[in-house]
Length: 382
Image (cartoon, rainbow, N blue to C red; front, side, top):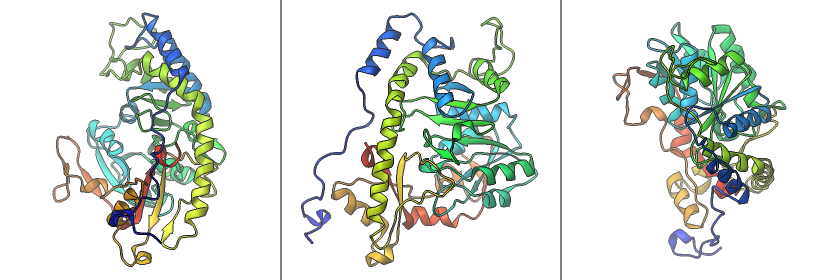
């Protein structure tokens, strides 16, 4: 074996991975169509936004789609639609992007961090059950990396305690649970169209739901200045916000969506090849798509790492070595609650009305310290 690139050897891979996002003439075609109209954006629910949201909802096995400025905005407005606010608690994963925790904090609610399953990286019904108190109002499970969370288990806990489920599907554009896309799960799923996501327009999001009244409330009231459907645009009925998806964003999404299925199947093929190869390396645990995960979204490829199998080499050093070989990788270096904005001693959150508490999260801490690498979809599957 030659010298490691980290120690001055030649990298295994010198050719760059495909860039992301990707574009072709279809995106330009749809953007030009918007440029040639006077409907560019705002809260007018233009034809491109309407068409895309309907198309994505159908693809996601849902009835309605509501465009948003971001997945974070979708999560927040869904919680507000369910009446979540000061004095309530919302259960969130400790191992995810910060947006999942920020959404309930912006409503004034408190958050409760819970642990995840060591194979799927999604929160478990048992962890949620242990965290419920009389103040618990909602749960935000994340389909992390594109692997579906335990849908039926979490639904059972929610039903037992009268909790609302707001599914964070930022990673899960093509994810299925037992043969059904996760966007059709009641009552709400929120997707992201951030620049790094498998379906992207740079920034944006959509909520999918099967509840027509909820869809109208989100579309015409909460995301558009508190208006009501079929009422004058200057008539405002309650506190609302400005979170519309624009016609330009929707036009790009129309083009990107036409490539989504082809790209998704390619990611699936490459993921299976990687899993077979990595399974032969002692100390490396490739992703484990559970039997109920009939389709993985493959937003990222997350593998586990055992330092003992590599003579105790720390994860950080192993990560630098991989990057030097031309295989960039990353991952969280600490759970969400160890971010500077969270004061573990007081339970206060800098700048927020609500506070937080933590359940024991040994799996999340293991994953951050030594356990898990994340390979981005553009690197692993572009």
